[in-house]
Image 1 (cartoon, one colour):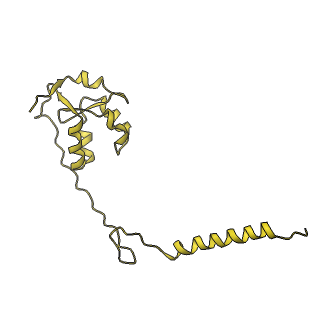
Image 2 (cartoon, one colour):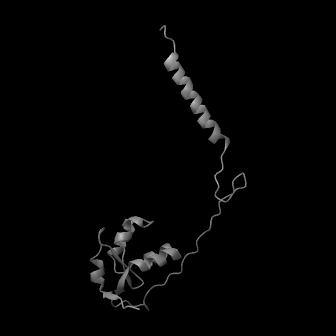
Image 3 (cartoon, one colour):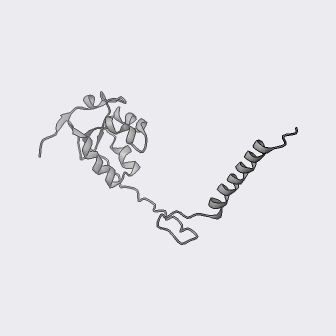
Amino acid sequence: MESLDRFTSAEVSSHSSKTDCWITIHGKVYDVSEFLEDHPGGDKILIQASGKDDATEAFDEIGHSEQAEELMDCFLVGVLDGYDHTKAVVHKKKPRKVVKKPRSSSGMGNGEMVFTWVDYIAPIVILIFALVSWYFLTFGDKNA
């Protein structure tokens, strides 16, 4: 495995703009500049975290998914010089609530679209209204 570059806190904190954004999580330095627009929490949260020595606590408190943690490897540029893993605060991830969506009245809970009578009647009513309006505007009372 290739050894990672080492950065000081001052070096990392100098990369704290929208075009050049580095953050430190668990002693690892990530260049998230290209991820700012795609971050589900918005770019501001990453830019705010970039000015700090360590964004570990904020990262752990949110409870990111395993996919998010795997994605981080793409942005890894090095390690924080002098990072003491023994002093790091380890936060247990908060359990996520799984909310089950209620099944539709048709019993299709597999993501299929379910149409109600309004989905059929509303367009027909709008079409009839448009045709009646067109008729009266075109062939209306010509004697007036």
